[in-house]
Length: 318
Image (cartoon, rainbow, N blue to C red; front, side, top):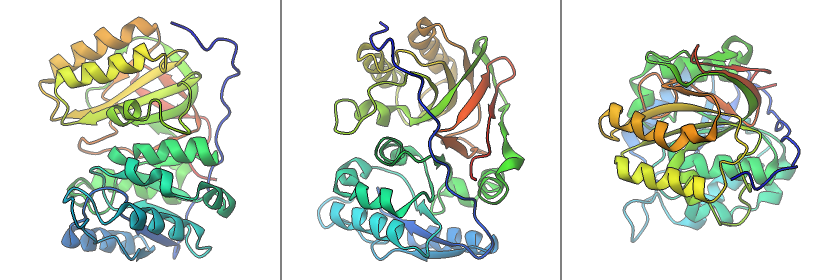
């Protein structure tokens, strides 16, 4: 299975600067349509943190033909690019997930994004496709964290606090976990560069342009939502068969909301992943579940499966 032997361990990605009070943050819609009322409530929370949120022009758009998309692919990509290339903007936060990031990711001018320099980028779920793009195409780390136009953010003070602390005082959140039910699926300790997100999106990236060849040297963080056990089986099996999981150093599992009884999901994860022979911790507390932690992607960390913790070697932001 280990087809990529001999490659050097990946280096940590470039960290963007932490936010200061008064920082301007742009809110973009990269995926599904955004509920206006939820967005306004989320913006109020950001303003309460002494941030200056700016809503990009197409955030509340609806695609003319497909109700599952927020506006056209070109407009969603354009909003992301304009926000990133605006020197007055310190962070770009996705309004919500859903579906659609894959449709617009190749319409972004990644050379222009790279030239504009590192900035804070926040999102999860469908935004996994963009986390991978930022890692591979710009070499900068990103934040897998809650999004302001989602109920998970609006009603979850623990999720809010994890993001706020990461944005303003990242040295205060250097150890993530243990989650409420956290512990070792496979015992051990491992170190590596964090990567991952929604596992079905990672599988959907296989074979597409500018995709990382494998997770070698990485601490893989995966979660998902609304995927029945057989579909999770298919996704994990595809990642295994493609060789993408070869060389991963350890795995942290997040939430599996609406994926069926957890005992069944847990048995499937153990069946598919234990053969990799690496430490695996479960229920770390990131993803679509309550109290979702903000997790930096692209940075060195140590996974302690028994303790159910992920300890960062450096703060999420510089």
